Each structure stands twice: as structure tokens, then as C-alpha cells.
Image (tube, rainbow over all chains, first blue to last red):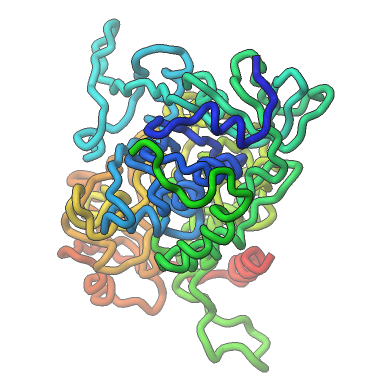
Length: 280
Length: 261
């Protein structure tokens, strides 16, 4: 049963240095507040998993919290590049980062296999591309027809963190709007945290609402505005200006570092400051 | 994010500006810029289409324009899971709130790829890329060596399975030797189902036998020499090279009104 607690407590209890962590949300409901709390608590040596790394992972990679990134599309949606990620890949700043990349279909199927506790998923994909020889996928024949298909390994993150609009006091969660792979990520992970815009007495059914029962979630934490500059449909709007602003700011290492210090790391500090690895 | 050109911005979606010095006392609208014409030509490809899968930027603008001018019943599908989205504004991202609020249905990402794209239910796909080769294969992964890239691009996104799942692929790309290269640094997406490549200079189509791209149409005022100069291989020209119909007043007005919203 999900335990309702503060964001700082939830992150402190669930996430350890070196963990594989999936903070999901496909453009919508990206758990920025939780990601920032990870950085404030100094979590490091993480394997970050996310279909679309977006600005949040650009920030986490830019401060050096990640040893590896597993992803399928690493851009600033509609704007351009993720400059901190590019700096890490192209120049090893602030540290080199390992990459494992897939297509969206591959990542989505990997999460679905993880949620089903199956070892792999089968799909038609990667055919004719150079991706197949640069990532962890293997051809497989259909045992019934012999058709050549592709097998992708299940994703089973140590921790999944997602954001939703509402939870009730029992920790049952409801999200609506673009559902992404949030449910799959929670069910695939060993431990899970859901941050929510608000805790309500009772979940009202919503068109297209996805309900995740509290008994498959470890912690629920209230984090109003916790998806900004992404959005929580019906509650906050996507801050497209911030995505454009980030494209300019993040090009420069010093400007980036100063911005992070002022707006993220020095803000509500939980463990005394910047990201220092406790157990490198 | 289906492999849209990562080097251009969604903000420039309607075209890289109206030619300077053409506004003022003259009541007739400024002539179409190369970018506007590219968007208009792409929109025309959707006249008869039932459904189109689109990434951000110019493809999104073109699909919205097609719904306004040519084909109001056109179903727009975004990889964020929004099926039948009817946004009033050109969205910045493929997951803007307006897409979810106006969609007929919203599905999860696994469902989008497994039930809708992989099955061929979506007719046309609009894709972009940083590099395209003579067989319309696309690169949106790296420039240079994979392990030590000169430029790290965003990666595959949905493109590989969109390009093999949708029945027809239309590539929208800027025409330059940087983009049109003889050999890709990385094959992210195959060109097997590509029917048209729409650029700011003209339209290329694959030869039915060899699958090599042939320039079949050039935009008004563009010369075949110009197209060759902007292409990184010896480009085959169609026997009957057509000139693109200039934009109608209705197309141009609708595009400018759409981008200004």
C-alpha cells in the first residue's frame, strides 16, 4: 500500500546512488520536482531511463548525476538539441556518459514486457537500420509462422517515478491526458514513487483517466506544480517559452551551472548543497 | 519528435520569414518564401489522405493547413498518443495540451506503436531528418562516428517503425548538401516506403525500378542546376520535369493566418 509522505522523504527512502531510475512522462506530466529533489539530495552514478530525456535529464546529466542514459529520443521537443547531453556525449563534460538507445516502439515494448514481468517483448522493428547493431536487440523467428521479428529485453528499473494529477488518501492515483508509459513504468519497476498535484478525498472518474491502485505504488508525495515546465492537463499549462529559453541558456556551461545553483540546487536544500556522491 | 529536423525550430514552422522589402503600400500579399511554399506543397499531398502521422515543425504546420484548405476530415495522429487531434494553434511539441484536449482518442505509447502504427492503420507519415541518402534512407542519430560523434543528434524517436508501419512516407527536408548526402553516417530509418521528398527547391520521387530518388518537380524560379548544387550526389532528373503550381491566394492566406494564431 502506498505511503503518503513528503517528496524529500520519498526520494530519500526509495532512490540510492547507482540505481537505474526511470522518471517518465511523455511530454506531459514530467516529474521535474522529483528529479530536482534527487539532485538536491546528491544522488549520483544513476542510470537514467526515459523515452524522451527532455530538459529534466539535460539538467541531471549536466550536473553529472548520471553514468548512463537509456532513451529513444533526446531532443528539446520542437526546439532543437539538448545541449548539456550533447556536451556530455561529444566532450565528456562534466563527465562521460554511456548511451543505450532504442526506437520509441522498442522502449515502449521494453516497458510493457517489464510490466508483464516477461523477459522480453516481440515486435516488428529495427529492420534495415544501423540501430540493431548498436543496441541490445536480437532477431527472433515466430515459432508458428517463421516470420522474422525482433526481440527487445524487458526494462525493470530499480525505481520508477511519475507525476499525476491526483491521489486519494489511500494512495490510489489517477492521471488523465497523454498517458505515455507511466503505468508501464510503475508496474515494471522494483520500487515506485508517484508525485501528485493534489491529494483529494475521492477520485472522480475522468474521461480517459488512468487509475493506478495504491497497493502497487510504494510512495505518493504531494508536489503541486511538480511537472513544470512540462504540464499537468487541466491544472497547469506547458511553459513553451521555458523550453525555448532553455535552448539558449543551456548552451553555456557556466550559465547552466549558475542557473542550476540558483533555481534547483540551492532551493529547498535537503542535504546541504550540490550533488556530491556519497558512495562513488 | 518523429525525427523532425533537429536543427530547425518549430517556431519557424511556417517558413523562414517573408521576403524583406515586400510589405508596405502594395495591397497584394508578399510572395511566398521558399519555406512557405514547401509547407504548402506538403499540405497538397494530404488532399486525399484519410490519416497522417506527424512530428513537430513544418510537418505539423502542413497537416493543419491541409485540414483548413483541402481536407477537413483528415485525421491527425501524433506519437504522444493523440488520435484525431484538432489543434487551433501549431503545437510546439508533439504533446502540447491542446492536442490532448481536442483528440478523438488518447492512447498510451505502447498502444500507439503496437495497435495503430505497426498495423498500417495510418496512411501517410510525414518525417524529417538531418541527413537523407539517394534511396531516401534517413539519419537522425549522429554526424560522424557513432562512438565519438562530431554531432550527437536526438536519435530515432518513432521514425524507424513509423517508416515501416505507415503505408506511405513523405519526407520534408531542407535542400542542401549538408542534408542530401551520398552516404549516411548512420541509417536510422529506411526509405523503402518513401513516395515523396519535399524540399524548399522541389519534389523528389523514387524511381519505380531502382528506388533511387529522381527530381520530378521544381518550385517556380528554381533551376535544375540549383537543385543539383544543393544535392550531394549526381541527381537524376525526370524526363518531364514539372514546375510546382504557385501557391493560390487561399493557400497562402490560410498558412499565414495559421502561423500568426
